[in-house]
Image (cartoon, rainbow, N blue to C red):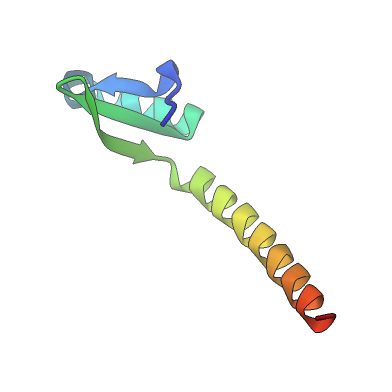
Length: 74
């Protein structure tokens, strides 16, 4: 899993500066919170997640229609 360095926050920083971490999540889409140098939690901006899910739903619909059309010809 590749994580952008702008998305990495330590557990200590998240505890002490939660509002700052929230702003980072809003800017970058999500923030990964590390505990003991390992990724432990993710703070995700749901508005940006919804956009991604809608786009993936659209792609899935297109793929399903394509496969259904292909199956008709078999």
